[in-house]
Image 1 (cartoon, rainbow, N blue to C red):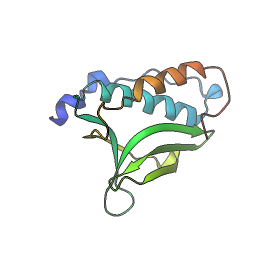
Image 2: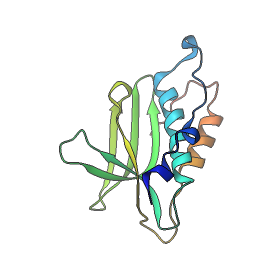
Image 3: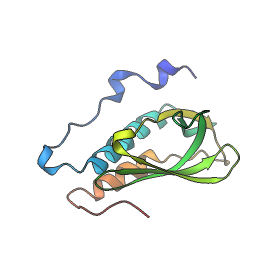
Image 4: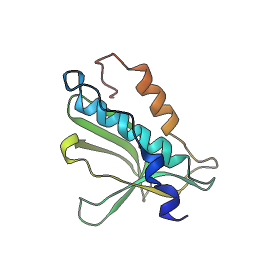
Length: 134
């Protein structure tokens, strides 16, 4: 699958930023990532699912993403598995966030699609200050 097919700039447009007085940076980042993931997943085939390549840790680490969350106002976390099948959680400050979404081989019979679930969770939490954290 060619990168141009996955990252069409017109399809990656995001919803507008809320007024700064209502802004929780972690929630806002979570909402944007959810939208990016949902749009990215819509272009994957049946043998692929969402993953992330983390390049700020020395050699690149690939993470199959199972879930995404935040702890306001400044923490974003990713749950998933690494290439060895180990469970991992990446916890990162929103000011240092740098994640490359990649298409990875599915790990189960049916590929996981988390974008729709993340978007629904984001809609449900509108107007709430609670964290999507565990």
